[in-house]
Image (cartoon, rainbow, N blue to C red; front, top):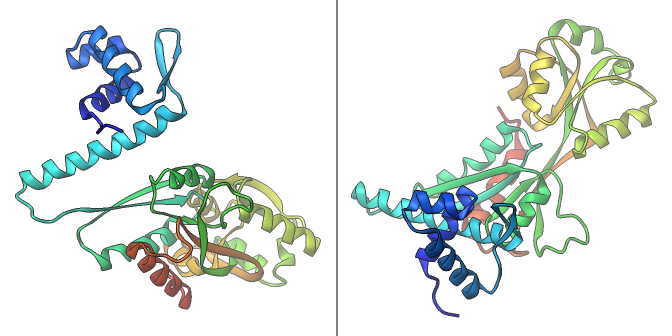
Amino acid sequence: MARLNYHHLQYFYSIATYGTIAQASKIMHITPQTLSAQLSLLEEQLGYNLFERQGKRLVLNDMGHITLSYAKEIFSLGDDLLHSLKNHSTDISFRFSIGVTDVIAKVFSFNFLKAIYTMDDSVKLVCKETNLDVLLGELAVNKLDAILSDTPLPRNSPIKAFSHLLGKCGLSFFANDKLATTLKSNFPHSLNRAAFFTAGEGSNQHLSILSWFEQLDISPKIIGEFDDSILTKYFGQAGYGVFCAPTIIENHVLEQFNVELIGRTNDVMEHYYLISPERKVKNATVAHLLTEGKKLFEQPMS
């Protein structure tokens, strides 16, 4: 295959950004006919159409989305180059991209990811937070170097990746001081009919908690389901009900949200995995994160 023409890639990027050849041509000061011809040359070189036409708009197809993601990466590296030269810097910024599933507590992600900066002060950390399915798709096309997840790679996944267990912990239950005082004795049965907030319906924690309640034959009153764990903590802090969080961040929750501990359980466990494209990790940064991440489970996290 001939070498990629980056002018063609820039034209494609503009069309994808502005939605129509006509609009992109105005911004770039190029005739629509020229822009259309350059897009055709790029598609011919790649061997794929990159857009589907919907009325007057051009909508990216699957191959178009992949091409756009690489174009953004290429142009971002170009910006980094210009920035370094402008500032007379001889340091080369090493880019490390990691995905984090959106159910993982921010404080855990922070304590996990900050280990990168103890390894190399020239690293540029790129972190994307969304659901595991989306992150696995980006890992498959090399947009991510690794994924931090609360669940392992799904069985029978077509994606060639491997789950490395960082650690596991139980759950701690919290409420504001007034409510916690009434619920500490006879925990966890004291939670029966108590107002309770759970993690979002699609999360592993949500399913595990409900199953645990059923085993204990208790029925807390579920008054909220939140994907955002911070929002859950604010409602708990304000006295609306009980919430739970991984025991590994118990100290942080007590210190930052002015709530009281009701009790703990190890009958429901939270697991943390680092998913990488390699069974035997060769990427030095991923290996470093794996080693340092396991250390987080050796003592309570503040």
